[in-house]
Image (cartoon, rainbow, N blue to C red):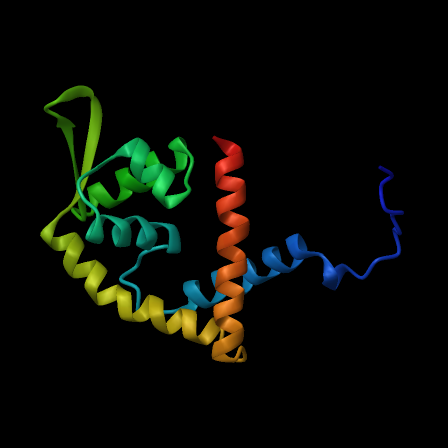
Length: 152
């Protein structure tokens, strides 16, 4: 089977990786200009959101669920812990594992920030009709699931 002929004269605006990167820059800008997310970064909010719905989790499972590498997750958990938003404890069943739980203060910050995170998402997608949003989310989840499985 022969490869399709590659034409280096393609339109950059048709390259999904480029579009995702530019989209991430737009989202980052919206997130960082918002005053409605309790001083959390988007990845910090993601970790708190996961823990608000699934806890306790060991750090490995939390990192996988949040799609964060060990170093980044450890830094986020440390920062959230210093703010009193999460707590780390040793797993009594397996002393090698750290369990991470959301604290009452973390739940309050999460609940206050959740509306802001939702609003940022709405501002990010304001020009996209609802039916196209569903397609976008489905396709991005397909890409994510395919590559998540491939990493294992």
